[in-house]
Length: 164
Length: 400
Image (tube, each protein chain N blue to C red):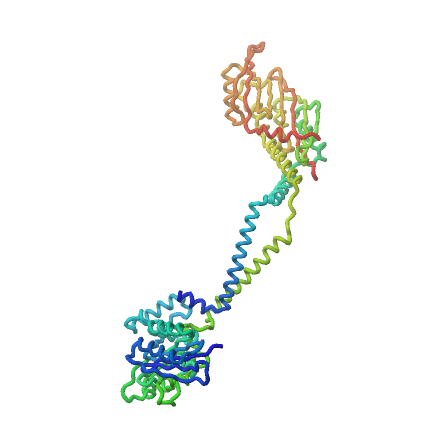
């Protein structure tokens, strides 16, 4: 007790008042933080930051897809690769549908093809190198004998970016 | 401003100087009977009761009969409080037989080397006697300290002559005490001559008024009462009202903390209130969620190893085996092969080779027939690995 009185005496009224004011301010700050935390638990979280970050990620990913206006060039590249691989593509049907979210479109391509197995493999390798936004939907090939070429249908999905 | 009351205590008398708020200050004396602490406290109580002072600030000076002085060589003036206390105790233990009974004080400003010891029971008793009568104990100093502060002696030997006692203090050019000694005078010894012959230096300054020889020594100290004695403030057992140098640091730190706390209190809410971030709309959140699902589905589709499936089936089969039919359906995660082989051992070898690739699982023969040449046409069916079937529905597109 004597020590406390001694220290208070040393500080003087000015020191004691400053200490009290600082203590009150710190207490007020802590109380306001506690209130903010309480309100944060009551109110729903603001997801703005998370969604804004997600939008940036989406834009980054979309930049890797070919644009929708390059659709004809993409199909031409696919057919050119078949020709170069000595795979005959005798026809084709193309159907474009937008994907959920309206940022990508799917070009569903059904291609009747004819050629030997090496031609098929060369074409597949060329597609992997030139059209990375291409995915196999179904393939059905058959031949009467191992000495004959394959014929059948290849269904591919090409994904294109709808946004600039 | 409250009245000041000076209480002086030497080896033979206790004196109180104060007007009690009425007229010119005057002395009252009480001789000490017994010469112990109790007699001092009794004399002080008697004087105060007789004086009946109003609210006053009490300053107490102790003569060398009650206060001891010692000059110390501190290794570092920036020592912490605990270290200073420990050193003080160490040095005074060699001087005082029962150091625990004494209050030890070191100067924290002014004369850094000077330290004092006063009987703890005397300090406590005086404090009790003063506070009991509504007086505020403000200062308790050895008389030599107050005298030095008043005389401003430098580069000399300061002498305080207190009747049968004399106290010598050697001071350097800055007035800093270098050594202290207090002793009882021999019969007929002239204190000033003794101080001069002490050999510390050639000059000795007598502190205090030489006049008033008929008064007790403690009364003659009145001529030495300084206007301010903060030079030796650190020796004061009751401290001073003035903040010390370290206290200013504390006060500065407190003020800075106060300013920072105030700034944080004001600026933080202002910063968060002034620029509220606009919340994203529900429809935009739904759109982002849809785009996320679509991209996840497409990414899974694009990671499907369909080139590897075809390579395994058309290129990596064992010799003497050929594929007549190939049907791969990633959405159903199914593969169907019709193999042209010599026998079932070759079919088994094909299944083993395909499964070893890590792209197929659960391959088995589901039927066979033979061609006109007698070769085996085996049907093999199984599952595809590395494909996320759900991705096909996610990336299947929506109605335009």
